[in-house]
Length: 318
Image: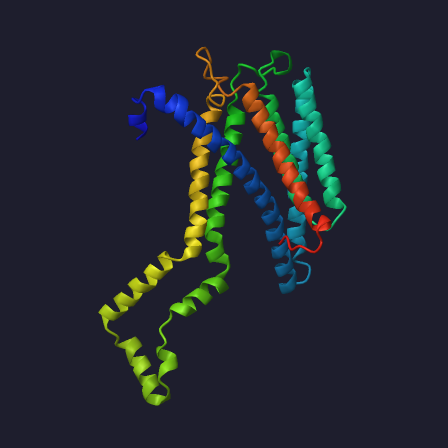
């Protein structure tokens, strides 16, 4: 299909139809990616805190190792954020847009931490990870500013930025795929409750020694064809589990949207000109504003998760 698409003319399929579809899909992936990053931030902290509690229950004092790991992860995130902020202030200032983006990133990060520390919601690990992610998004935005006065990297190779972006995208997709299968792996109670409904009622039917003997004989010397049919029936019911269908479409939707996102990123959201170069094909005001908007989105969502339980105490946000 990829080879065949190379021979399809741009007009009218790609230039007018697929371009608009890709733009919509790209926006959807940006929103989905911020939700995935936010979910990762919360689950990372919850996972390590749970492991700390379990280790502490097994042996007193052993849970502190996980708490130290949380503090180390926070330190790494803050060092990364500090380094990015210093680098951006040194290299990418000089015009109003970049100055505003960098200053807003710093102000919003402080506000997020103030909201998190003022209540019981959230965690320092989640806040530090989102701060590091916000600094990376800010750098990606200012690095795509087409104004030469405040973008010294304009026209240069951005291999590091591309690699980091690909890594983050891969992690996001991996997390989305893992979350799709995590419910069955880590919630065996739900799976067992479903499997109990599938079991045959032979054990509850006949009682007494003869009934027990028939059950044992059925297991030990049961007909292979019967066992095969039972296995096929169980597999069919497992494949038809509505929970799997309700989750699988989300993963496939994210995978479809990431293809749209990548295509518009490489073409300045469909606005690349004929004299554009391969090196700076992703540089442009549309790309810059889309990236900084995604930063504002993820920080707004995080602040909402912190403030919503306080604003609406009678509602369950778990």
